[in-house]
Image (cartoon, rainbow, N blue to C red; front, side, top):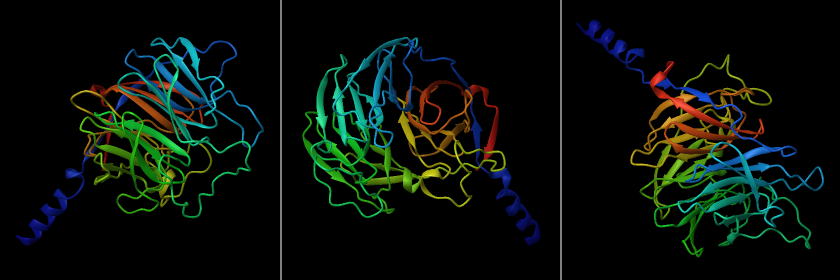
Amino acid sequence: MMAWLLVLIALLSGPALAQQVPVISYESVPNVLKLPANLYLGEATGVAVNSKKHIFVLSRGNVSGPAFGAAAAQLLEFGPDGRFIREIGKNLYAWAFGHTVRIDKEDNIWVTDKGSDMIVKFNPEGRVLMVFGRKQEASDEVAPYKRGAPPPKHEDGRFRQPTDVTWDPAGNTYISDGYVNSRIGKVDKNGNWLKSWGERGDKPGEFNTPHTIAADAQGNVYVGDRGNGRIQVFDGEGKFLREIVIKVPFDRDTARAAIGNKPPEDVKGTQAPGAPWAICITPGPRQILYSADAFPGRIYKMSLDGKVLGVLGESGKQLKQFGWIHEMACPSENEIYVAEVLNWRVQKLLLRPEQQISAVNR
């Protein structure tokens, strides 16, 4: 009797009860952006969509300066049909090394520039409304930050290589500050500094490159803690609520790195499978969290509590493949825009979850 019981337990604890993650069928819309002659994207680091379905792309184009330390940032607007409309902020003082672009509920345009340590808020017409942070003065002797040592104590209202921005329902702004300071800053709707939380580390509430940030309808803040390979969730005051670690199996033999050698199986941090390079949360009553990694180059569809509902994509250079997704916009559950650093492009993805093509076991 005991032997049969042990066999039954073994069967029930094996693949029969393994959680299956659907592989979602999807399409990539060809030539989604219609660039005019003599206008090109560089590294596409940001993409956002406003209420009119206009597409905003932050690209490391319009490069000027020396080969090392050049300025590289350009903000472009396209219509819903991909038709080019305009460049916003041409020759803007804050442009140095563009990182992300986001659109708030009033269709204001927010750009985070890692190189100038600045965040700029434009109104829908493209005029500057607010400026956060300050870049180093050209009249001084300046040098890049050293990331290896613990950063010096941060100053309220100033940033060191910020990465992204989001808002809660009350209009407060949260800034991920970022490669150096490893914290989250909070300002109110009028731009007044309120507080910050976090420092470099791997404990709950600590960060190693908070690279991407989003907020849900309840005002909870989701931080893509890329260097620690996790998403941390906080309330609006910085209280740690939970962490999300994405672990979905894949075939290492067939998986490719987007550039360079395949990372080792025990890699941690930025190149680890599931490490969040970009996250976005859909609007509406049933919100979905999307997260993208660099290797093996997948997008993960999740509930807000971190349950993986589906997976799609792989690294590569063709349509439906990805080269380091740096930012995503998800205006609806089955429509995602992705900006790719290595492939110098934006893809519009249309998901077909009803056409599940396979599943992987967790």
